[in-house]
Image (cartoon, rainbow, N blue to C red; front, top):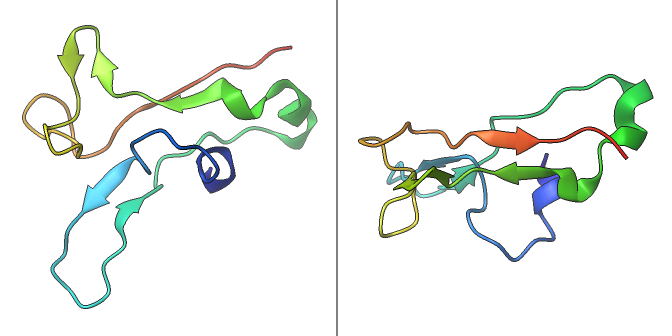
Amino acid sequence: MWGHFGDRDRNPAGTYYRDSGQHVNYYWNMFDQVLIRPSLLDMFPSEGVEIVTHAGRIPLLTSTGVPNRRTGSDHLPLLFTLGN
């Protein structure tokens, strides 16, 4: 999944954010993924997957740009399409 988002300039940088307060802290992680069989890879374009940041008019991110646990979850959902 990092391959689909690593070269994009859009936020957020992953689907899960954690500030552990440790010396080494990666903050954004990509735990949520789309798993498909190899024969369908040609139907899965790079721009065909996105991290969802709104549920209708409800923002899933806080004003600081991290997942809002109060209105959604600690993970952001993924939306993907298959097809040509």
